[in-house]
Image (cartoon, rainbow, N blue to C red; front, top):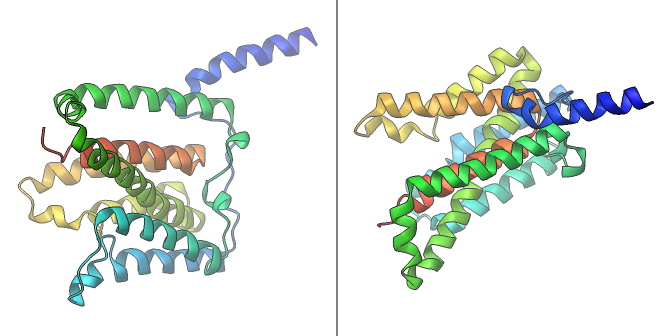
Length: 246
């Protein structure tokens, strides 16, 4: 008994480090049916191909697009509605498991990365954060943008890792599923506009590398909350606060 307790205690200590080598213990596999998986692919095509991640269909119809703080929550709500009603898949089947079901390695890694990411981004954006902190009139605008882009990052992971990668992995295995989902994430409607930007090659390389990491992390952990919130934190700082004038 004492030996078992000592072994468990040792394993628990290592659990705080295992996440950094993406070792989270046993992970659930997608357990939805092939028919449900096909419906998930249809949802991805509707959201990203037909509506467009930025509701570009409205622009084609010459209808004014809503502001980001309206568009992003609407897209997320629509995605969840279609997942439950059309695909008939529960969020937990896509990796949105409750906190109580996380392993110690998942919980520890999640907390560590959230703390580290916030510190690093705060240092990088220190001048901008200082300027915003000194201007009370901008606090509300900054808060709205942070929340909007936090949700935006989560939405992207729900679509490309939660739905697309889960189904492609179920069909063809992890390597192919991760790669194909990340190609769609990098070069599809979500980031295609970077093609006309000033430095498309470095931009696409960076997006592909980040997406590949999220894809592998999701495949290793089966935890969509982690990749969604990590992505959201990055978007909140870089696209939310980063686009505000210092």
